[in-house]
View 1 (cartoon, rainbow, N blue to C red):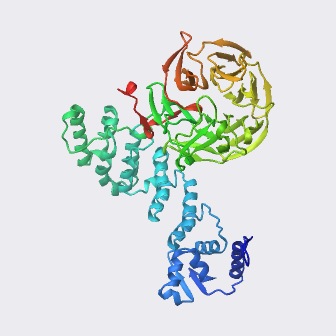
View 2: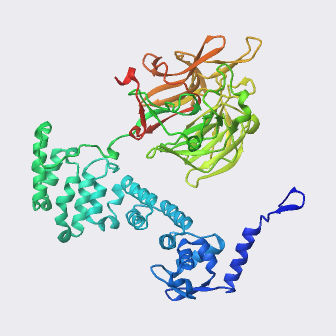
Length: 626
């Protein structure tokens, strides 16, 4: 590439120079040409170039550029590292490439740690995170601690905690030191449903080498949360245990427990009894989630428990946290699997320099279109860390579409792609392989449509094209890739909610285009319609309390909830939007409003999922929480 920026000179840049240089140096290395140092490891010798080693490794740079004895030596012996790993590190220095496997990852990481090569160190640690299982997580955690891989150490510890029942039955668990075992069983994050699992794990560890380990029982038993055990279990399984009977410290602990149980408010014994529940004993709460959307109030309420009426903040998408100014994701699609995995995809990513620069209430976002970017990003929610994790992006960017889950796969239907063009393309995401594939085309283009899944079949309902709403209902068989047309909805609609209740599909709210005036406008709906899948027939359901669009329907604890956006025009120049939540009284066949102004967010995706809300930030609402 050349730049003739001024008379008499030219700036030249060879874009291929870096790769060509590496290739030539690799040729010199392979043919032992111009090498100037030999590394000896175990029984092998490697003839290398000092400058390549120094440019790759701060360890070798310090060795060759300071007054160390090795700087003048032609042959250098290396210790505390294996020859095969050194060979791979040298290959990396000349190529920038490395093959990491479950067989070489630990040795490579140890070599990278010695030679201070951060890219290899990080790559090996990331790879080892993917290899964690019940049989190796304890060993990997100890290895990570030795080699200062803090992120890997934490990941391994989390794996131990989340899979404690399986881990405590492995050989690695039985090889733990007493201190390390005490650290594990003291954790609040153990995923156990009952405290008996913890006590029995400790006993199993002690009995594995009883002669050596019985002395540690007095240190370990206080980590069992005895107050979470029923008294019958304590009397039958702890007091009667021969190891406990032979341990004076354990007997004192049990006497203190009796005093604590008799009068906990006035207890003054030497032991402090932990009454906190373990992570696995705290059941996740079934909540309504408002994913994405546009709202000036950041952070926005986006998690709502309809049973307790508590509200919470879930994390923003990663890019949202890394940008200054006003940021929002309009009209993404979200789906929750039968295993409670939460995925979100696409949407229009809207950027504003400041809070005041937002679209007017009576218009949509047309005046800001040049700044709107439709995306193909795809995230999975990590409730343990309250963060969205990148997954493989969709094949095509899109917004205003729907996602449906069936048989470990997620299907993407309809929507708008670049330049607001409707698309009929169907994409499929394999959750296990983390990969998207093209699977076919829809019979027609649909935008702002809705989908539900029942018995492995996906039902596509409603939507719009241009300024026309659809009443279309189609059933898609993912295994056969076949479409079946069904009886259409009585009322065409888009941006509405749908939910399977038994063998029926409820649809509620949404919008329809009105041609009653000289202009075409969108009008919200309050109608509810019910589809019987066996009979292929529709009937009317009880109307919502208010007209509602951007609507979500969800079945939570056998109750059907509807949430969505309602609006009213206080003046000719301003429209007010707010979100309401209603619950269907199946006996009285009517909707009861439980929230009239939950939040102001709009153009979101609403789903229901089970979350550990203790991992989130709670929003205090005086009218509810006092």
